[in-house]
Image 1: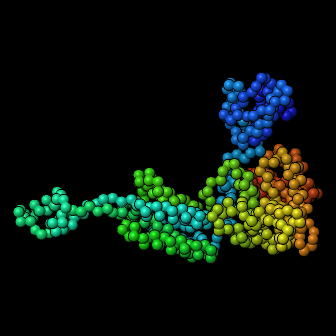
Image 2 (image 1 turned 45 degrees about the horizontal axis):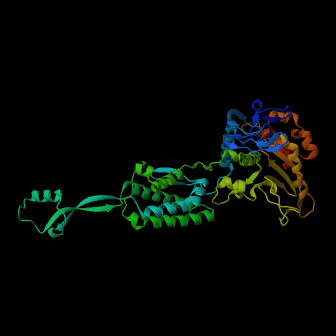
Image 3 (image 1 turned 90 degrees about the vertical axis):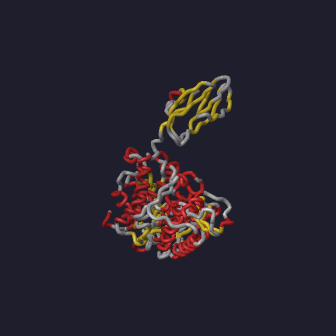
Length: 482
């Protein structure tokens, strides 16, 4: 079996250095072929004496098992050089959070509330968590209320002697102490077995609801009307739960919690404990997110990171006026909203704006398109002009093709008032290696000045703020930073 490698041509498969997320042509000469990679059969088609196929390696690197006509081999798929490392992935998340704490403070959401003797802050992501998971908490509580933990207890009571159904040892001890002998009184002390729900797990549950009710009181005082109204509804719901017959019988736990075997193993109580454990895991100092972003979605994270990087440069240039337009109260969470948002906006000085996922179509007010709807990733609007930044995570080898696609923005977005093309300059943002930046003309300042388009290197973990500030200052007309 052979594989086509450029520029070597056809070489034996076992000698090839395979790269992830790459298409290869394979050929085999023989009576028949059974090829399986990691147990998955690869189909071939026959042309003459050859069996041919195309193989696309997965977007993962590492050792793979090859089965060829019942013989087993091993080969290695190497990482794509364009792929960001796991360390850079973590850097992007860290820098997004750092900038969000500088810019995305929601007015009124940084007050403090006393919970169990501790001073716990509240944050936007904590509110997002409460909002999107309250329905789940309702379902959990309904199931617990229907069948709560309980235990049997024996309590002493005084009964008429004819109502005593079973004489137990405590009753005999009571009679012996009083020396009644044969003269048994009409009323005797005995024990009766009761079922109670006042157990440790339910006591913790009641205390957690009490803390959540106090936390919701804080969210009811924020300046965002939609947040305060929804917090009030949640507060009323928690209050009804605490007044239910089930919890009326339960005393409130005091002191620190401990996770018991019932919390660990019971399917419903475990979900309840984990819900409240997650509630206080959010960043209490500002805005953060505690929701997983898969490594396969690195391109989305890179788009967000590029946007926040531009925001940081503009903020440090003292050009940012208002960031409230970024806040969207949805069930997805603030940063996922940033990816899926339509027209998340930061207001800049002199009436300018920076947008993420700005939408342009035929009926848009100031700028419109006369063909299809267009949604550039990052847009800087300056009066009658537009500057487009398009993050491209994995195209260093195809920058020319990607820049060619940018002509749709330059030609297709028009200013409604003047009828002229609105997009003045377009730039691709890419984590291209330094070697490519030094040799490719798309990154050179002269190319940018001549053609009003090009590429900008933006690599997580690598400081390039000077060049970014210089370009943005030029676009914004801020001569003091050029």
